[in-house]
Image (tube, rainbow, N blue to C red; front, side, top):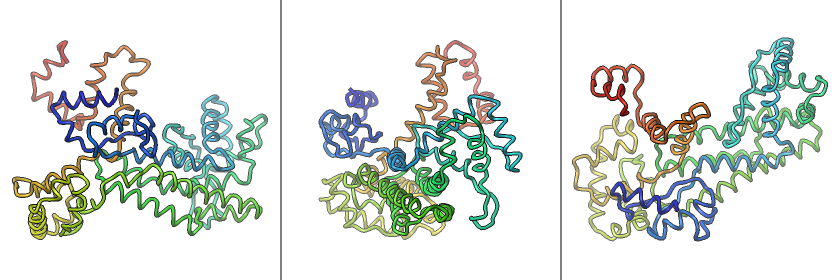
Length: 422
């Protein structure tokens, strides 16, 4: 059904199905049939029946989210359950908030609310953890005072009839090192997730980001690095507990790396594509031929491709340093192909790779925007109205001042706004 709908939409906009390059979606079985792309009854397989060389691209941000969740499930403490319980505890009663404020004041710690955690994006847990154990001062770590850990511990270990799960958590010696480890390791996820959630991204960038991320985790695992503050807290524990937690942290690294290797399948993607980034002033013909054999075999057989590569290398040498170093790969290719019909083979190869969507975060963002418009209060909005609101929200980047000047210059638009036709 979904595959047929995709074909219908392509046909509606007069786009040829044979020009479809890749299918990007989250990693649900209905989309890909699992990490091995198994089974005939998933969207990718149905599309592949019409285009055999279709490239599958799962959502790397979601892969990281799921990898972290599965790895943390092996901890002796369910941190996610603790965070949810903390949020619900303070949302239930103003009196509980006031008790918390008094303890913060007594301990001379600035009061801060506990942010909520989104269950569909496990890595938002890092924001909560940072708030709970944020450090202050620049003294040796062993003497530092944890900003919110002390008041929360005092609140839940001294208050009668505190929720048992919170009382036990803040009483356990293992709790603080686990939080500190997560605080440290989730920081490694921040940069790649930020890059992966950009509205635009290129396949070579995606592969580099994931490889760099795995390298950082492997380095941490090899060196048994769990974070500076974590190391100090572990040393203060019983030796058996310290060893046990250390093994849990190593298992966390192993689980994340294995999960990413399982779901981020580089072997299903074209290879030898780094030249697309134009990071150097020359490209290698044989590297391009290798890639062309995978995405456009007919081009790989043409002698004309060699001539085009030679011409491209000559053009790259002519680009001034400030432009070559300052432009993105997309900008460089735009300038190379502008008013230039001498590189048809390279144009097709570059178009194929640049058209591959590397993440579906932009689509997921539209779902969030839809939920923000179609609320319980605004539940009578027509579908066409919601569609129009989303189109404006997604496609327009005009600020309030810009919109004002636009309306002042366009009397017909103002007339349409005042009328029944929007």
